[in-house]
Image 1 (tube, rainbow, N blue to C red):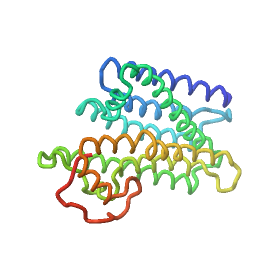
Image 2: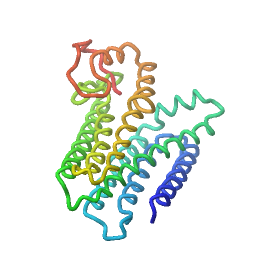
Image 3: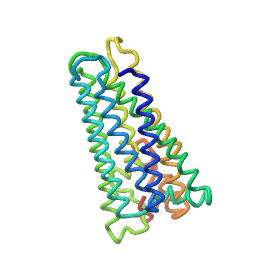
Length: 276
């Protein structure tokens, strides 16, 4: 299979998958399913791309490793989003888009999801580039990449669990979750999500310089950073929190970094805690 055919096929499949996600969202009225479908699709097609036999020989241990990492990431994130959607209903970000787009919501959402398919294609290609690194055996950077991805998955799982535990406490209703990892970053789940994509870029790099195209895999974490920090992640979510909570969330913004974990910048108001 040539590279061009593989890329075109992946693009078509991802586009069709997100068209299916569009139909699911419209028929169920719950846009949260979109993110679950996107997560599963990115992981499954990423794993498939990792295992493509471009060299015509046997599948390498690195290809198998990267495919397994992609599937594990997709299962963890996808199952989490499925459970959250079933429990909480429509995602507030998509709800705001519905209000903003009005009667044009259906058509705007379709093309919005096609943009998501394009973003998924970039991420899938980053996975494929990492898997196709021709360096023999597993190198130091492979193990470093594994360590990064495990750290990312564990960190995101802890952040999600801390938030869920906080929400389940009736005494915390209407408060900002600034405990645990949430006291170090307003969006620790997003930070660890980005960190996971950095793992593939690390695996793709060949220290000998024999695989210069491996550096293209950094398109994955760069794109994910832009999406999370400047596009579909933090901006709409924090806009929702400011509209619904106001002063309490603004004080949280002043105390805690938005993305990069770090020490709190001030004490803030101890009683103003709010669920994200």
